[in-house]
Length: 524
Ligand code: HEC
Ligand code: HEC
Ligand code: HEC
Ligand code: HEC
Ligand code: HEC
Image 1: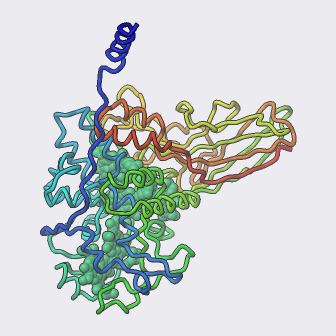
Image 2 (image 1 turned 30 degrees about the vertical axis):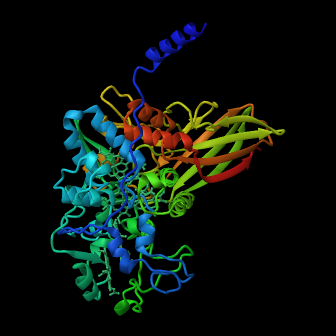
């Protein structure tokens, strides 16, 4: 009996578990002081740009601390190189093409670990990033750090050459800011940088250098992200509303313009400045921020779990401002109940924008006599859906998303394996009208042909439901998910140490959709 069980056990081991699961990636090193010809660690800037409590310095009118050092360090820009999802996909790209590991690392560290990439002359490896001790490795783990962003020169920004991380950082040790007349002495004396007025810091083109991602694949260039090009094609340009207006806002949470001294250094700590931008870099990715909070010790970020959770909460609040959801018509056509739902994009780019794992969909339920008579989109494990203008069955879901496909037309989550978008029906920004043929090609929706209600700024979907009686209540939720559950499964199959780390975290906190907006109506 015992022998038989042992044999069975062995048999199942050899057939199903031939490959052992990779050990999870070890904890990342903590931040450390570092100074090179060009860069400093973020802690150095915190000496004067992180206010304590009980001071007007870097506080808003309601007394909230808006220090750049405080807000940035729990944002995904600050955590860009410690992000377990990023490290997982990075390691998969290398595992898929180990002969090109160095070239791949050069691509993947350019925007996520830019100061380290610069410092290493482009040769920062995956191992450097997760365990190295060189100045470049320490700077790399600092993510999109203060001295990287604030040293980007105006030269060439917005040009084709500036995209995909084509920004320029010189050796002049100039720190650009909004004010033409900064008190330069303290920074020159203490950190050997010269603060200097540079209006480009407040312009979208600065962000566009990293928020336009075109990767070179075996099949040619593939546009992975085009957030800046989407914005450049919208009416926000004419309105003068840059990325910073929404992502580095110069108003507080109540909408009041911020006016405050910007440094704790005594010689300037009483000079009130306005505008002052809140470095929240708030987006929509509350999920990965929550995973980092769960793994705060592993991340080595040197930030408290509560701070990262507060940052995640800001992302969720931001998602609730991203769209307007309305039931614009309900009527009856014979036995068919007809419900028309409109989603308006309030952001400055496509909704959702950015990394192609984001998606948004409608969860619609009809209830009558206390029971649910129709439901679509209630389970996030729905099969990949075509774009829909009409929904008439429970297994049909209207999902707005971009999805990369490989050379066989199969969905892939690895950009370097991709050839093009198989689907991109993300809702266009207001006034969408690309100004050049190349911007048109790079932002063109895919799969929406024939839908006359997919227009600049909004999309309208009509539900035609049989068996939904008069008086039935319709409840609509607009849901957002940062990562498809199927991508987490695919990363698990990829079986790399960084993949195991990420998947263990993701399994412990299922990727529950965030409710962006709700609406309701009654069937006549
Ligand atoms: C040109 C700049 C750039 C390059 C190069 C780049 N990325 Fe990114 N990446 C970004 C930006 C910007 C985002 C954030 C977009 C968003 O939040 O929607 C991002 C997001 C991601 C995410 C999602 C992270 C999350 O928390 O959801 C992953 C995964 C990722 N990148 C992996 C990679 C890998 C792997 C490489 C190398 C093949 C790479 N990136 C190269 C700019 C870049
Ligand atoms: C010793 C204190 C001190 C340190 C350390 C310090 N700063 Fe400053 N910073 C100042 C002072 C003082 C000003 C000018 C304030 C004013 O004129 O209102 C300033 C201004 C700035 C400005 C605005 C410049 C402009 O013209 O708009 C930026 C941006 C800035 N600092 C970034 C940084 C960064 C990045 C670091 C880290 C390398 C850093 N600072 C470190 C004291 C400091
Ligand atoms: C009118 C306000 C507004 C403007 C202007 C704007 N955004 Fe956004 N942005 C939002 C909102 C709201 C969201 C959250 C919804 C979403 O994820 O698409 C968002 C999300 C994002 C995300 C996060 C996506 C994710 O995956 O988490 C990135 C990255 C981003 N914006 C970058 C930019 C850049 C770069 C620009 C300028 C080229 C810009 N935004 C202009 C409002 C704005
Ligand atoms: C991705 C780019 C980026 C990064 C990273 C960044 N900043 Fe800024 N910073 C900005 C922008 C944009 C402004 C202008 C905000 C405005 O409109 O006033 C700014 C402004 C400032 C100012 C002047 C006050 C103000 O709001 O104008 C200081 C001081 C400053 N940053 C310090 C820092 C420090 C310290 C860090 C690192 C903890 C940092 N920044 C990281 C983009 C960045
Ligand atoms: C040096 C490259 C670089 C520059 C410059 C840059 N970003 Fe980013 N940004 C990134 C990367 C990389 C990520 C993704 C980090 C991740 O999720 O792993 C990101 C993420 C974001 C997010 C998503 C945060 C979230 O919680 O979902 C927002 C919003 C954003 N950036 C806004 C901006 C704005 C606004 C500017 C210009 C002021 C800017 N970025 C400039 C590289 C950059």
